[in-house]
Length: 259
Image (tube, one colour):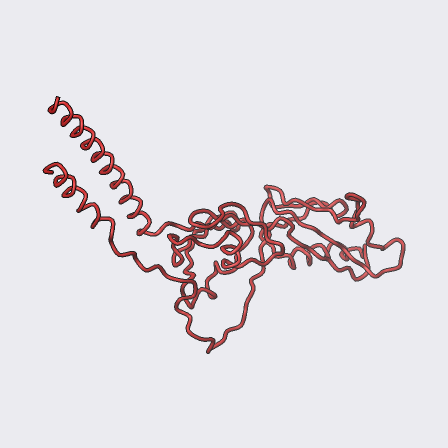
């Protein structure tokens, strides 16, 4: 009887220790109340980066056989389907076009690169008549790690990806992830920058990290509540193990005393 009372006194503090109130966590757009004061949607132009893969299509309406666009597109067949070539941006920031040679691309927007290619097609000699240059980034992807449903790489179907879309594609933020302090690591013009974005704030749409750029890395950190609960769990496991040892020792002692 005395032994049972001792065990009860040991377990009682552990029970109260495990019953601490759960900290309230912020929700998505928690501070957004209505749609008054609507603002315009401004989608920034993506900057081409090293190791990007670019699909480049050149179109001309000229019927002159010496100025048609086919040689500049260099079409080839993939599984029987016509496809445009993909040009990789090398470590120097250049692409090598099969007809126009080396062109610097890193740091330019798609429109700026298209303008440069169009200039080479028309100056100083007109190679094509009124050319149109269409460029797509074919390997747009970001990486998300931490407290989300599915960590890993996310490939965007297009060239526009918001932080909410990335989180959604990753299975959402877990119950213990910080929605108000996501870390975004971004490389731009040879430098690496780190920024933070609050998904509960009404100002989230104004953040430079709301629209993601290719190769961004997103980190969702654990809340202090999860860290505390993890530490509490470790403590409870240690105490439970110690109580088990005490119980076994007491049982053995009782058996030996009776004998």
